[in-house]
Image: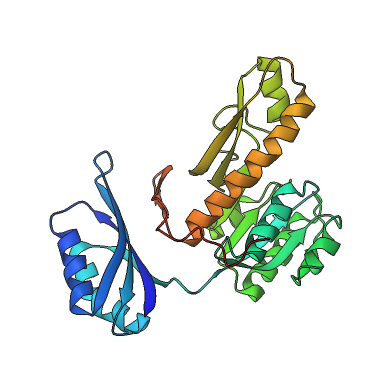
Amino acid sequence: MTKYCLTVTCATQRGIVAAIATFLAEHGCNITDSSQFDDSDTGQFFMRISFESQENADQAALEVAFAPIAKDFGMTYAFHDESVKMKVVIMVSRFGHCLNDLLYRVRIGALPVEIVAVISNHMDYQKVVVNNDIPFHCIKVTKENKPEAEAAIMKVVEDSGAELIVLARYMQILSDEMCQKMSGRIINIHHSFLPSFKGANPYKQAYARGVKLIGATSHYVTADLDEGPIIEQDTVRVTHAQSPEDYVSLGRDVESQVLARAIHAHANHRVFLNGNKTVVFQASPGSYSSERMG
């Protein structure tokens, strides 16, 4: 049986769930997982449904048949084949912990993505990337060549068919134009529990303030630096006896985990933009299972 998921966003109104469930039943589909959220503040309704087509219905046919229902409710919707892995471009500078973690997770099948390219402004990780049979592109970025560099980056993204860019500690600020063009399709990991301690040295700021928790935040990239809608966060406890360097070392593990969870949620179509915030549904049963261990 073919497995799909359906994502729906629309204004809150009566009969949405009934209409979707009836449609799926009438087209030989069995719902295996369902999540929904009605935001009373914005008046928006969000839903994600995993289902099996017991009659092997074609995705295009489902989309055509569902269109009248979507029109009636004013829905923004999409059908996704759960067997198709999302194509991703990873961008990295000189901190490789997130990149190496993602390479490992993809290798064992723990992330439902295909890394189609890695872009860096340095050569540090060329060997590890090539050894994973992934194309590596070194694109230097300076104040003088930034437009040309971003054009080269977008060419890699477009030529590879990538649907998502992941900034795995990429230490360059993207232009407003690129952020707008890839809106909702660039995920960053910030080494701070936002909105606290923004900027380039958040661990040093946290140390100076004597915090007892440090963390990491994964968010969508917007033109407003460190202000994009948050997808995932986590923390680790620290004490007065630890140094700023300890904060950095402890933070690396949190950054890697938070970024991986954010990518997992996005690739499984569990994240919905809701103004300046996100709606993130829980993972479907079995979606964290790996194809192999080690």
